[in-house]
Amino acid sequence: MIPFASGTPVELTSVLGGALNTGALIGFGSSFEGVSLGGGTITLSPGIGGVLDFAFVAPRAGTVSSISAFFSTTVAAIIGTPVTVMAELYTAPAASNTFSPSGAFVLLSPALGPIINLLDVSTGTAATALPVATGDKLLMVFSINTAVSVLTALVGFASAGIVID
Image (cartoon, rainbow, N blue to C red):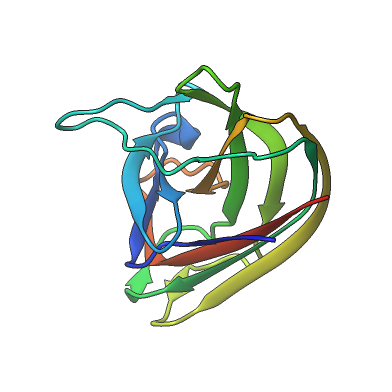
């Protein structure tokens, strides 16, 4: 089992029907938020303003057979539309820093909003069948899965776990 935890609260945003969504990369007790998800891929880059590396390298080949995730709000808010949080693995080949959505994801329930209270919780577990090669890099990304027309933000703790058989 591989665990992921944000450490501190992260902000997930959605606006313009999902075109300008930002998510958070979740590591092992640390996180990086504000990552643009509109382009479909995430490229890690050093330096000021760059997307930091929260990926891990698969030490052996296998199959990601399960993904579970948890999101707990740390800021109360009123939003226009209930939104669903998604946790998804992004993958990159061994010699790459560009990650793509793998299709291994879980949608958390219940949806959050329109009234969000402090410590509202959304969870989920999904079976997956994602093949992983030795050296593949895996990155856990949390985001809002609901397309909304007005800016919507969720702030909270994010954690997840995967099983590689």
